[in-house]
Length: 258
Ligand SMILES: NC(=O)c1ccc[n+]([C@@H]2O[C@H](COP(=O)([O-])OP(=O)(O)OC[C@H]3O[C@@H](n4cnc5c(N)ncnc54)[C@H](OP(=O)(O)O)[C@@H]3O)[C@@H](O)[C@H]2O)c1
Image (tube, rainbow, N blue to C red; front, side):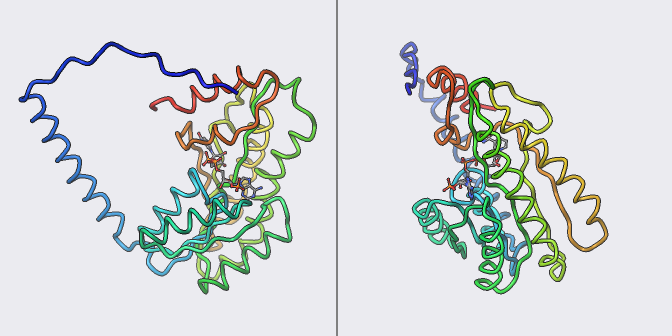
């Protein structure tokens, strides 16, 4: 698997002192804005709440753990890899977030019950469940087997399906929320990502239906539809067909500034 090195551009023009001063002032203003933002983040809006996030060891799940934690919540993060979880818990704890990591494969329905038990036991309650765990396989459909589709459905449909169904009753006492991370790929099927789009499409349909059915019961279900995010997820993608070619277009898209 190869990565095309960035092409060297022309040498930058030296900046004059006035311009440097302007950039310095802009930097300082940004610093002030960032610290105001971080103050707002530490508003305590989530004080006393407990948030469970699947796929919380990296990417979007970890970023959500930071945000909830900065808002005052205690977070339970789950993933399959112990090492990534430990790293994430250490980072969160170092930033003052109460965090607990649980090794869990969301494709195992028994493990899901254990995960919910552990989250409630460790922090004493449960207020929010975020389904963020996801996998990606990229390649033309003729190179994909039934198993590739099954795996996508297991992680991104059956996993969150079991977790959400089990969580509804547990969230009723706290009038909690289920947050389902789907994808733009759920609504716009992306060529060479059919297992992903198929699973996300099914999951978005279920999530929206659950939102309607739980309305007024005290439990809220929210469907989140992200576009492309630079989470570094392309590093964990499995490529089929011509892997180098598939990696090239996917890594390019995953690194685009928007
Ligand atoms: N990145 C994007 O551009 C983008 C765009 C739209 C939607 N999304 C969605 O956003 C979510 C997060 O994406 P991301 O980019 O942050 O992905 P990521 O960086 O690859 O992180 C995926 C996370 O899910 C965990 N995971 C994978 N399979 C699991 C399983 N069977 N059981 C438990 N945990 C599992 C991974 O840890 P382990 O590998 O250790 O299990 C990891 O913590 C996904 O649902 C994705 O589809 C992403």
